[in-house]
Image (cartoon, rainbow, N blue to C red):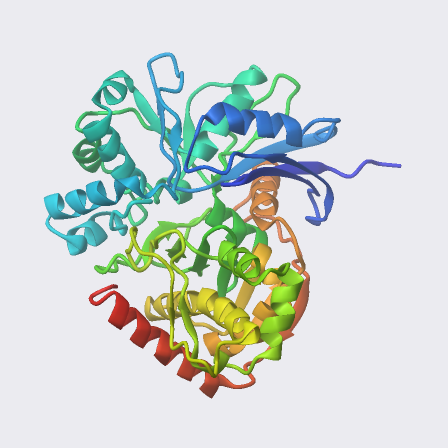
Length: 472
């Protein structure tokens, strides 16, 4: 019996490392491994390597011919002249750089200037803001730094180094476009903006082509350039025109493929490159699946119990509205905000309404994100729900009304890892396009009461304007 050709994709995410081994021809996941990352906003990259070793133990990669890494975007990994880590990596969800982000925006002449320059306006999450924070608060660390790479770059390089195949640091246009010093429109770095952020020149990874082979291990396994997590998910889902993805993981994102770059002077929509040769306008919120786990904890139930309570309430939660900014917020740019509950009365103060408000609150921020992607020129014919919170029965039932569009839930899967595996298969096969892989859809739903959704969205907008006047 002929063994099927196998490829592997890695998702080195905020919370874990997942490695999916896939059939190179069909995309079927044949085995998967996992390792755990620390629950923190700054992490020694050595912990990512430990998680990789945990995920790939027991011969997980046996028979694999190619591999690529997808990873959490924006993380700042500073390396010295010997490629040793200078300080723990600052992750996307570390908000201490909010002030330096504002400084950078002002120094270039405002948000519109950044949107025009690179399609991204610095927020606390963006790599450029983290570089400025280190420059201002840890000058000795910045003085030792020789280069800056991203989490997926670092793990790709470490895999190659351990297997005797490292030649140079590489990245891809998708992940690079989230740094604040790389333009998705031109596919080029902006050294002037890197100097503005870091206060000095730093080396950066070479930007490889979408299906380029960037190295080989000593046993001949091909390594592709990898990409950012959202770009990996888009590749794994095989996005087509009319699809908008809403990903409900640690963060929440809404994105779609576009044939041209965008420039949002508000900084709401970030103009990223995708993992192919197009663009990925994207809105990212800081709060998503953890809103549900926090709500369940507050109510003293598990996630299934939260679902049951939420579905027992009427749409609109009796007038309760949750602003779910439990960890601050990225979009709108409110890094120091906290969550708040609005419209509470003796009449609507029930566990069912509170559970419904938790689910609706998480989704309402993403509904604004879907609208922003639509306004950027991407048609919204259906919304694809992915991520851990997409498994929630309440989320699946409530989302179509709030989004005002049909919702499809692809079969549960590690789509970032699968997208990275698809890139690896592309690197082996060559050609102008990634191989076609089927993506099964598990559930679909159309809006049932869009007028109730519009009412809830109006109350959310009013609560946001009242609590955070001037918020984008």
